[in-house]
Length: 281
Image (tube, rainbow, N blue to C red):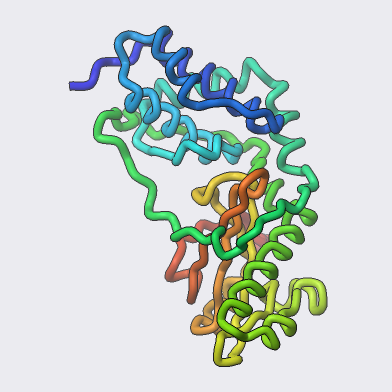
C-alpha cells in the first residue's frame, strides 16, 4: 500500500516542480533527474517513479487551470485533493508567476530550424492515464474562473503563423520525398490567401494530386495540451472528413514536433463548449 504523502512532502514536490517550470519558461536549461535526486533527499523514502508521478499529477492540475505545464511530464490524473490545494496555494503566494505565464503565452517565437522535417512526426497522444498509486479526489473540485494562459497562447497570431510555416515545410518535405516536387511547389497558406472563412489553414496534396486540407494548431507545450477549434473549422472537418487533416504542432519553444488526426474532429476529439452566444428570451 502506498505511503501517505505528508503536507511537507507535497509542498516540497510542488516547490520543485515550479522551480523547474520557471527555468523552462525562462529558456534556461536544467536536468530533471538531478532535480529529482535532490528532491528525494527531502522526502520520506520515496522512489524516483513515485516522485515523477507526482510531477505528472501537477502537470494535469495545471492543464485544468489553463496553465502551461513542464513539457517532459505527461499529465497524470486521479490526484489527491491535497495536491490540488497545494498547487493552488503556491500560485496564490507567487503571483509573479502569472506575469511569466502571460509573457510566454504572448511571446513571438523564433522559427526553429530542423534538418529533417519528417523526423518531427510523432504518433497522436493516447488518452491520459490515471495512476493506481494515487487517491481519487474525495470531492468535486471547483475551479473558479481565472486567466486561461493556454487560450491566450492559442490566440497568439505570430505563434500560429510560425506553426503554419512549420507545417508547410513538413508538407514540402513529405511530397519531395514522394517524388512530387511539382505538388510541393503548389502548397498554399490558405489562412493568408483566403482568411479564416476558408475553414482550414494550408492546402497541400496527396501523392495522387488530390487535395489535402490541413488545419494547424501550435503550442510551445506538450502534445497533451488542449487546442481550440471554431464552429467553422469543426463544420469544415465534418463536410470534408476524407481530405481533412489536423496537424498539432507542439514543443515549439525548443524542439518542434507534430502529430496528425484525419477526419471529422467530433469523432476524433472530446469537444467541450468554451463560450455561448446568448439572447434574452
